[in-house]
Image (cartoon, rainbow, N blue to C red; front, side, top):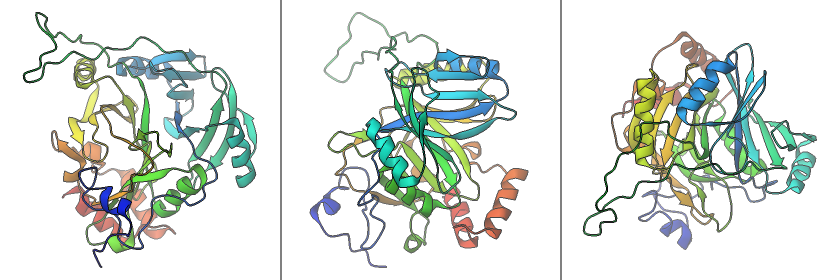
Length: 381
């Protein structure tokens, strides 16, 4: 396969000293749609079901969420930033992830989306009210696109510590004593999903919601078959947006991998992690700094085994930055930090995982033996 790069100055220069050493090859996926239906502006919130809302609220407060609203059947969680809630947990028979809700730029975008998809615009059951269009992505995840009528007000922040660097000290005659308290969540950052129909799902989010790819990952020796993971951001034009609002990767299962929530700084991550550890919660992986997105990270499991991430200092890209391409590997997940754990990688065998593999290899999807072996190799590289 030729290593000739895509023509054009942007494609040649977008990666040099930026986010990836290598850009697309001629004819590879462009990472964006020519004519999307709408362009969403951000994640609004994530939707879950759990049988025990009291237990869910205890963890949420320990992790650093505020409570926006609580009823017998719903728990709405928020960050300190003004805007919509981060998460809703509804009472259900089992613990499960339902799907993401994305924010439309304008109310008229909901009408445009409804006409294009044959869906209806309905009232959104969110504190403060709003309107929503309910869709189903190719993986089977319910996806909501919402326009909220009322924004939650901002709450007090954890203030970043004043740091001394080199010959330019900013703090004198004062000590650093960050309190041992929950990391105060500022906002929802991104969600990561696993899918057996990666290519179809990727194109749906680009064509329908107008999202664009920041980075592609591919399996060693299988680049000619296309990418197997994408870090996808919102297209806000010249306004920089998070390196990824949604990330998806090919896998034998279909489901939630983790979600990430921004906090103030590294001290907030570390002190909040100590607070969680003292209360008996399980750290999945951290603390470290990612490569794709550059975030400082720390991953935890909630009592229902869902993985949540504290992060700070993530990359922001404007729409003119083209996708980077890199091989998929465990060593490529972090610039520094402890080795990625088997728990984080989902490498611990379980009956459900074995069933997922068997069903994927028998089903009509993008998984086959070569892809499966490539994914296994990536977890060990």
